[in-house]
Length: 379
Image (cartoon, rainbow, N blue to C red; front, side):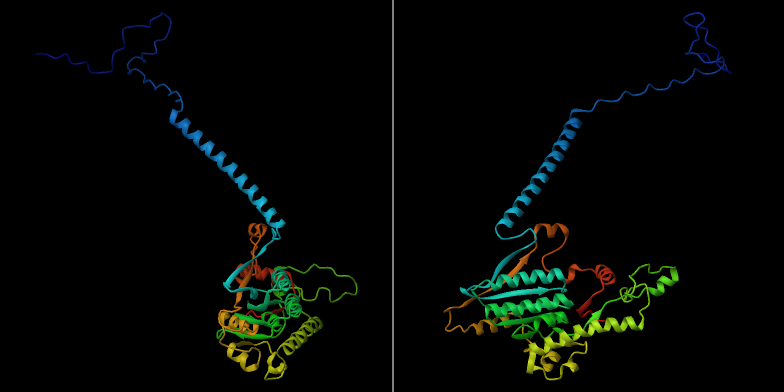
């Protein structure tokens, strides 16, 4: 058997010429080389399948539906806010009564709570609650729970005056229950009450005034930052206390004169509220120190050092003069404030709460807004 082996060497050119004379044959490479390789034809774009088109339609429909529902929900919320406004509530907050102890609705113990730093906004909200109580003839006693490190001088004084006014208008006893802290402005507002009680872990006292100021003059000199404020001729104290300039002795004396006037008011408020219950002269008590409940009791600043909110409520109930068991038993109601719709949107809750004010916010607030404060911040 014999095999026809292909010849060794470059392949022989095809003997078949072009189909048409004078036209090149693209199926044949140059003599001595293999035929050229053919590239695959480009793929034609495929039409989307039925399922792909169906899925896209579902997504578009779903997105449109959600957008429509969002618009509808926002419209409904605005209508609800308007309806609440017409019924005595407000888009900026409303009041709600929570029954703590059921009983006779014709004689009630009203519980109010102030929590957090005393600022203009929180003071105004609490005063609104007091005005609501002042119009309620069923209120026979008021209990105010205070959990505050204090705050602005003016706001603290407004709270104090509002409590005194409510007590006078209603002619009912007012008792204060101190929570974890009721220092400085928190103590100031409590001095309007007939009786003041604290828990055994309460911190109170801190009778004094502080002017918060950050001195950045050294930092400014290092980096070439200067205070460019311009004041009118003759108003040499207009820029006193600027964080970018060192405090001059005459400026410090000027600022201290403002603090001392507010300090004298604070001491007079404590004397008026506690009277002969104070065991030491006010100048020995008002040294800026915070006191434990036991220390405050020894100084006569409070009437009891191991009393919780329920204990104080019991004392208020007893002051109404209830006779008999189950007869004319007063109800105990907590009057609270709920934040309004726009307050929730802006992140501003109902009452001022300590957790809502971050350290950075407080730093910026103190730096940009110098003010006199009845505030205990642990410094």
